[in-house]
Structures are given as structure tokens and as C-alpha cells.
Image (tube, rainbow, N blue to C red; front, side, top):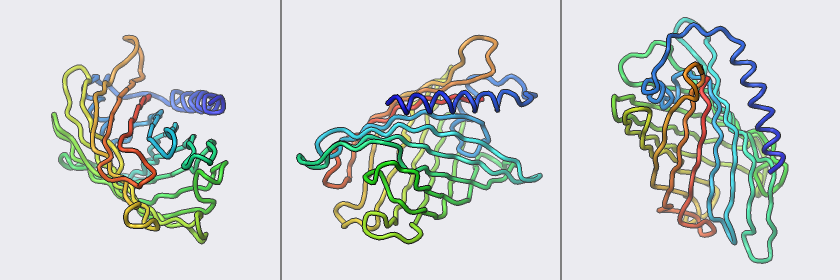
Amino acid sequence: MNLKRWMTVAFLSFYCSAVLAQSDTEQKTSIEEMSKKRQDPVSGLRSVFLQEVLLPVGEGTASSFSVQPVYPFKLGENLKLITYTIIPFQSLPPITADATCEAGMGNILFNGYFSSIVKKGKISWGLGSAMQIPTRTNAALGSNRLSLGPTALLYYAGDKISGGVVAQNYWSLGGNDDNKVNAGSVQYIAYYNFAKGWFVESNATVSVNWLASSENRWLVPIGGGPGKTFQIGTKSKLFYSAAAQAFYNVERPEYIGNWQAIFQFQVIF
């Protein structure tokens, strides 16, 4: 836990310094406008997510805390690259009564989405690649092989209701047994927006391990929860967003429980 706190503080300090050093020529954005904009995965906002996921596993509850920086790059008159990196710190309880708890840094997942700068209508899209980097400090927390694959997203931004999907699959470069990877996910995104930055969302990931047996292959959560976009102070240029969600796992491997919870805090620059 001390390692997580130290790395989070150090990363945010560096990231904030780099971003706030840039010139800011944008007009004042309302909380309602920012709340809608932050929900679009390829809107181009510079931000950092802090996320905690709780999931019953084996003899206890697994915890995955992640730092998720999002940073855009303009590549031309009509093309941008949105980078989305997930840096996880995980704790895994004993799967069986005679096993031990495992904890440490997990494998970093990097996503890069190419998208058009010019937005036509309410539909936005992104195409790119996903890369899982073997940074895990404990063998129980992932493969020791680099994994690569395609990723794509589609998003509809309405006035009140918005939603979309993000799909990807990646394969390990070599490896065998527990280090071989063939895994995919479909993240579904749905929002209903209220006044003053309040919203209700259902935002979770359906994951699949193609190498597992058919009865242990899928994890399918259904649920959602409330959230709010806000500012602290009248002169602040930063926006924040916080949300909490609860899910029921309608399909799951035998060693995973029937619920999960997701808590998220976002800093928007």
C-alpha cells in the first residue's frame, strides 16, 4: 500500500507539472459541458484516473488499484493519437485454503487509438493497438511475456444519453502454461446526464480468457452507479470527476464471486 501511495503521488506531481506548464487558450468550459466531454473516450482530454476494483476471489477479496493517464497527440490536420495507459497494483487472496496472498505491481496495459480530429455528428471512433507489458513483480499477477493485439472503440454522444463500446484482444509473443496469453475484453459504456454535472453510469468490462475451459472463460458484470463532475474553487482550471459502481457477475469463473465494485476518481487538466 505504501508503494502504491508513493508512486501515485510521484506520478501525479510530474504529470500535473508537465500539463499545467503548457499554455491554456481554451474558453471557460461549464461543468455540464465537461461532464459530457470527459465521457467520450477520444475527446482528447488530458487526465488521470485513479481506480479501485474489488472482486471476490477464492478465499477473500482481490483488490486492483490502478493509475490511468490519458494523453492525446496531434499527428496532422485531421488525425490524433489518444494514449490510455493502465498501471495496476494488485492484491490477490488465496485461491485455496492452503495458498497464500500475493501482491505487487501487475502488467501495464497500453492502448493507443488513432481518431479523426474533425468530428462529424455525434459519433466518434478510434482504431489502434493494445500492448500488455510484463512489468509484474509477482508471478501470480500475470504473464512474463509481451502481449499485442488490436483495439477499437465506437461512441455516441447524446444530450442526455451517451454510450459506446471498446473492444480488444491480445496474444502473448511466445510463452507457455501460465505465461501464454490469448485474452479479450469488451468495455460497455452508458451514461445518463443530469444537471450540475451529476450522472448515472454503467461502465464495466466483459472479459474473456480464450485459453480457459468453457465454464471458466467469461466474466460478465451487469450494474452501474452514480457520479459527479465538479470543480474545487471558482478560479481553478482543473475539473474532477468521482463515481462509484456496483455489479452482479451474471457469468463468472468458478473461483470468482458474484459481485464486484468499482470506485473511480479523475483529474482533468
